[in-house]
Length: 212
Image (tube, rainbow, N blue to C red; front, side, top):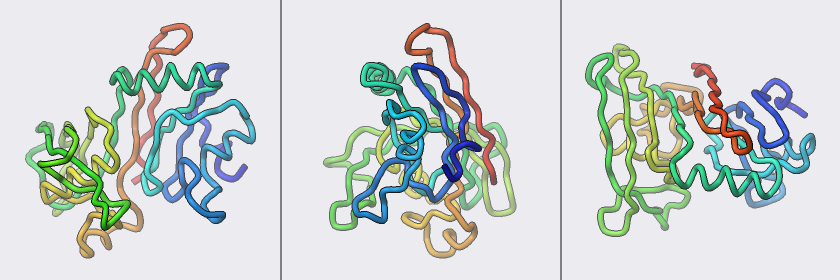
């Protein structure tokens, strides 16, 4: 399976963790040309593997699947109850504070229906959305951030950062053309997952360094 054996992080009888490359769908899309995806590749090797959460096609990093309907439900509930700690890393345009500085973005998000799949900040109809950030490093005109999505809205990190004028480099949907052209891909990576094992309750910790 192309790209899957190298991307396997962990597997047992209850779950598996994969490292998704940028540019590969996490789940099937609409149309025959969008059926190749990470979940389908995994299911060829583990037919009981079921999707628990999503990663954007442009985003790389850690992707969790449950084995069987019961484990899918248990893990899905853990995500819904915010019992899964997810961390990301991104490089954004401009300088954001000083190294070690922390902050929070709390802006409601909703679908931008005329421009799907884009999302937008919407104070009237948007759902509460919160992202925490920490400055990891500063460049001449860029900042490397650690990101913690407290909520899990579609494109949340991308829209929140664009909304505070620090779009992620290489973002084809939300970055201005000049910022998009500064990277060959979206510089956003799911770097860490922390959760209790759905069967034993033992703490699990998975890490994937950002490839950029």
